[in-house]
Amino acid sequence: MTIQWFPGHMAKARRQVTEKLKLIDIVFELVDARIPLSSRNPMIDEIIKNKPRLVLLNKADMADPKRTKEWISYFAENDIPALAIDSHAGVGMKQIVAEANLILKDKFDKMTARGIRPRAIRALIVGIPNVGKSTLINRLAKKKIAQTGDRPGVTKAQQWIKVGKELELLDTPGILWPKFEDQSVGLKLATTGAIKDTILNLQDIAVYALSFLKENYPLSLKERYQLEEIPSEIVPLFDEIGKRRGCMMPGGMTDYDKVAELVIRDIRSENLGKITFERP
Image 1 (tube, helix red, strand yellow):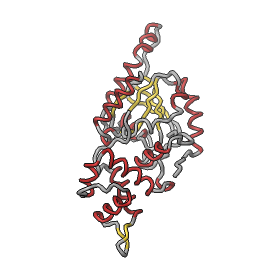
Image 2 (image 1 turned 90 degrees about the horizontal axis):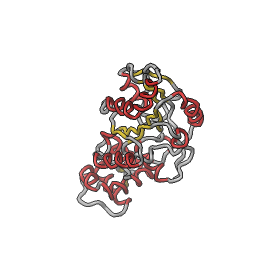
Image 3 (image 1 turned 180 degrees about the vertical axis):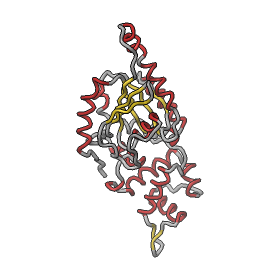
Image 4 (image 1 turned 45 degrees about the vertical axis):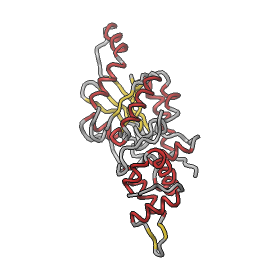
């Protein structure tokens, strides 16, 4: 299955981001802590070039904490500061402003030395759809400003948002790249909900997800579906889950669509625990 999703407004968003770069001090790059690499836009490096950047690993509450630490170290080794946050619960919000101040200290010290009055930090928020940009903005602003939604592609235009006296944010529509060179990237994005389910074959996504869980989180799989042993083949695994969860059709056949929906829903609602789908 080839996964591609690039609505027209995303091409426009790329142009808009490029135009706005000269107005901002720092880029907040929002990624999904469960898939920190796959949820980064490969075009971002090329677009923002040498602008200071802070990577925010959002949805850290849903990710494997051990893997999140590894990812923060990975970014640090590549000279990119990174923070683990949970914008939904408001965890890590204060650190964002503190870290941005630290990153931009030299720039603002030079401005002060030249007699320029201190002003709010101007930050651009970028990220792929459904990574939580609107939720983060509303948390930072402490009021509902940005439209949120649990479906990708809700934000369609840019807007400046004041966050107290210290920060001004520029929100942008989610930018996803036109083509996934590596299909596993598309599968990870689909599993975590960054791509509209309506354009996906959920059975294919569930096959990927179950194969990954079998290798990396077998105990979670056993506990959730009360399996004594995990079948080595994927179809018997679907059958076992179908039996345990009542996803059956008349005549005792497994309803594979229902099993697929169940597995994807369980992953996204953390019924299988905190999972990270890639390592540095």
